[in-house]
Length: 177
Image (tube, rainbow, N blue to C red; front, side):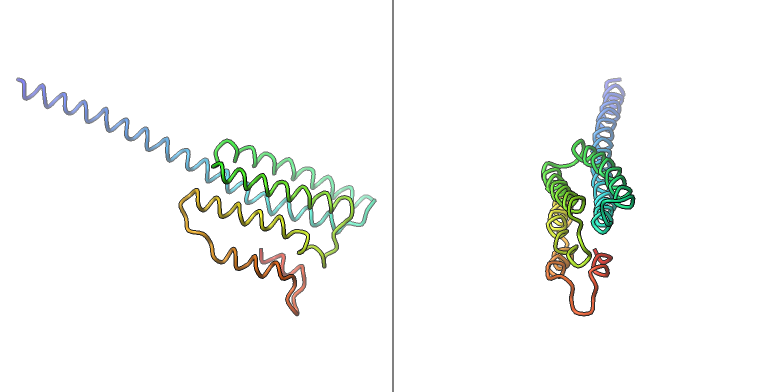
């Protein structure tokens, strides 16, 4: 009788411990998924928002085209901020800090595009601080997810910083990154 009772009790303890372990594992997996989704959202919005800033910088102002581009940048700024808010809820401290740096650089780039315009031949120079901040953001994400750094990312940054190589236009360079 005692053996049967001990076997039943052991079985119950095993079930309780197994359930506890499953719940903990599922919670960790859910948090990691949320973190990854928030990182993906910021990364995707970065390029959409940055490209809208570029188009605003190209638009002759003042005028209807400039106003349309400003409205588009404003809309994408809202999407960008929404992505940042999600990152603040789920991301790491380092990733959030780097994302704030990207935000600051995009704001400066947007102000320049809105107030002065940015000719194509100067685009790669003016966007570089935002790109460096974005590279730091990617490094922070990869570190947080326990992935190795991307050597190609930094190698591309060195090429970007040099400006347009002979025979390559600034717009061609922009499609690479």
